Length: 299
Ligand code: GDP
Ligand code: K
Ligand code: MG
Image 1 (cartoon, rainbow, N blue to C red):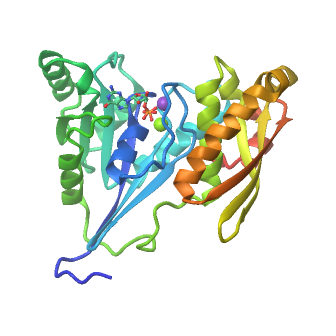
Image 2: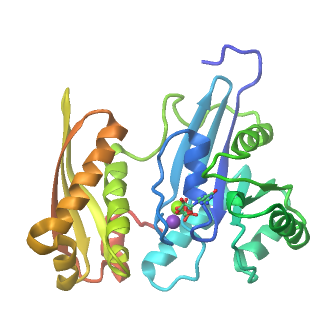
């Protein structure tokens, strides 16, 4: 309930940028909550993930999105359509870059140049890894190359440097509007989505090369009791050889995934978790429209 005398403000804030610049880290920092999975590998985030930050007289709806890439297969097309749809309904755009970014002219910069009606806050992230001169050079570069960016701000999402000021700045751009979602909601995705994401994160962290990209995770059963949540999950892989890798010698590798994911889930849900994981083959799911739609990549 809005008990203050200020009018209620609400709006959508899109977090976009290349893979690995720190978009998910930034959303988690701004939310004060670990909603989006973070790994050092590109293309970890596959969906548009909403983080809803509620204040007495505001509601800020962040969209964390997959990194902008040149699509190579159907799954990528779906991922990029999440990015572009999140630009369309944005009230504020957070365009995240980092101090390592190579400045090849990309289609998204072209697109942002044309978005003159939406405030664009261009963030130069990871400044904890750079000296002042490097940071200034990046800021200068972006002022020239994206002149319609409303502000160019150096930040560190990891160290939460500049993120408090960023939040204040974003709030200033929110239009007067009633809330879009119930005021006690944190996200639009169900709990089982986050459970699946936690398993996927551990897969990204524990396996090499192509294997994590070939995995999709589904929570087949999610039963919440008073003091325990029981889950049955399936890891889908594309080929039999990958199934062997995921399971490992006498199940050792899969056991690691399970233990680590369960610990994470217990923190997130604040409850004991019983987690069962099975591995199944779904041939070429990344290019199969039916499988993609079943896994929630509807375009
Ligand atoms: P995304 O792909 O853009 O969502 O990037 P992630 O949030 O998954 O982060 C990619 C990697 O960059 C992870 O290893 C993060 O820990 C790291 N990272 C993110 N923000 C910062 C930062 O401000 N400083 C440093 N040093 N690393 C960061
Ligand atoms: K990443
Ligand atoms: Mg991400």
